[in-house]
Each structure stands twice: as C-alpha cells, then as structure tokens.
Amino acid sequence: MEKRKLDVAVISDVHLGTYGCRANELSRYLYTVDPSILILNGDIIDIWQFSKKYWPAGHIQVIKQITSMLSRGVKVYYVTGNHDEMLRRFEHFSIGDFHIVNKLVIHHSNGKRSWIFHGDVFDVIMQHSKWLAKLGAVGYDLLIYINAFINYISKKMGKDRISLSKKIKNSVKGAVKHINNFEQTAANIAIEKRYDYVLCGHIHHPCNRKITNNAGSVSYLNSGDWI
Image (cartoon, rainbow, N blue to C red; front, side, top):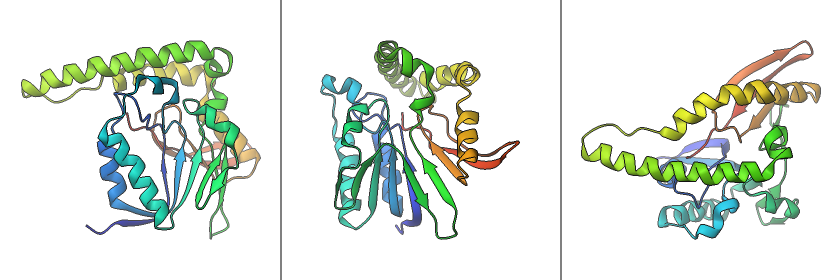
C-alpha cells in the first residue's frame, strides 16, 4: 500500500500503558503515512499509571514504528504533556532526529507559523489540584476496563461496540470549556503572538476551525486522542 506523504503528522494523547489505548488502530494509521515531521503532542506514554506494568505487544509495536520512522530520517518531536510531565526536565534533549520539547514552533515554506503545545498549562484542575487529576486518571482507567468487558459481551451478542468514555467525555467537555475556555484561550494567545496555526491536545476533542477575536484570527487544531 502506498503511504500518504505529509509535511507534518501530529498525534497526541495515546496513553500507552493503559487499557484504553487504541494502539492497534494507531499502528494501522502510522503504516499509512509518510511524514517529514512527526509531532508527538503530549501524553504519548502514560507515566502516571506506568507502575501497572501493562505493556502489551500492540503498544510496543507503536514504539517500533516511531523508531522506524526515525531510522528513515523523519524528524520526531516529543512535546511533553501532563501524563508524561517527568520528561519536561529533559527539554531540549536531542539525539539524532529525536527531540524533546515543551513547546514547538514550525516555520512553513509559505511563511506561516504553527505554535504547538500539549495544552495542560490552561487546565485549572491540573495546575491547582494535581492529586485530584491523578485520582481521576485512575478512575478513568477503571472505566476503560469496565467498558472493554461490556464491549466483549456486546460483540458476543452481535451488537455494536459502545464507548462509555466518549459519552462521559462529551458530557463533561461542556463544563470544562465553560470553566477554562480552553480553545478560546489558546487562540487568543496565538493571535497575540501572530501565529497562523495553534495545535493542542490534552482535552481529547479533535477540532479544526478558525477562531476570531478583535485582534485577528487563527486556525485552531486539536489532535484528539487514541483512547
């Protein structure tokens, strides 16, 4: 199968090491693309829950595919997130074409600029109640485990799979947006800094839209998740 050539590919919120990670789906996607730059925009490895020692073959395969891209000359930027925040102390670490950064600016050939960061810096809960966020992560992973069991039964009964996590996330996102106004905040700062694009992850809500304020406009993109 011929791969799709891309200037830049962005993935985020993979949460390798958790039951909810859709590593096999991500692996299939990575096989279809041939980017010049691959941006891992935070929460790729879930270090918060790494102690569970859950690391199946599908998760290892994703790592192998990324290292294979590196061997082919693809530039890989690991932008740190909150679930892999311990990597932030290694900001500016580079080995070959692999780089760890806390934020990134891409200068495109047409003169436009993309500002890329995970997005947890805007999260009030993360900044002021980290223990609560970690507790929520454990509860969320339990939900994923229950959901996997429900889908196993649903498949046996010939019914479609359901995603409890997506339903809950979709119902909660309105409240999160109301409190933090995540997307507008990211856009406002990007407009102030005169970026053309701002790319985030963190809120697990894929998006591609133009956001405008009195000072201008910016293309806001969110790379969603793989859980």
